[in-house]
Image (cartoon, rainbow, N blue to C red; front, side, top):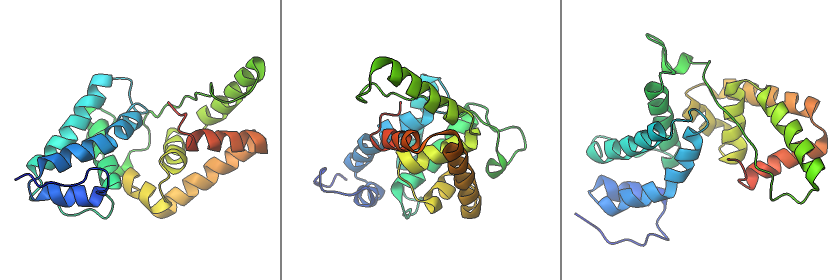
Amino acid sequence: MNIQHNKHSASAKEYWFLLKIGDANALESLYKLYSNALYNYGSKFTIDKDLIKESIQELFVNIWTRREFIGHPADVKNYLFKSFRLSIFKKSSILQKLEEYQETENYPFSVTLNIEDIIIEGEKKDELKKRLESALQRLTDRQKEAVFLKFYENLSYDEIAEVMGISVKAIYKIMARSLSFLRENLTKEELLMLITLFYMKLYN
């Protein structure tokens, strides 16, 4: 059953409701809405483009085939990110045998910055990029992911905890330590520039 709906005005929750009652167009709309963000998120865990694409496709196929059994998530984006993250972990062998998903701490999460659109002279721009990337690389991978989800995806602490499968208290500690480290290793201007880059979505 296909139901006509306005793709521009419908929200993610409305798309979810429609796909659950059999509207394939709603599933396609959700795919278009979130596939790029999911791909970008997946690229932080692995450089295997085929694995990332396969995980995204599999996620939406599973949602469609199991639509009658899946409930209505409080936040569709969080549900997709959490499900996709688990799929990436399994497919890329990040999870060790007999290890619980929530217990996983050691996993890759890479960060690179694109500051080409920032109006700064050549040598100063290169120096700034090196300083920002150096500070980011010295965070743990879990800290990098939390910072990415907070400033790039603009998720709340509760939402980050849900996506990463850990407690809200743990997320507060992770973010506090991350921001403390960045404040100690960057000037106020550099830290502001870093956050601005996230919000401008210049993060590749």
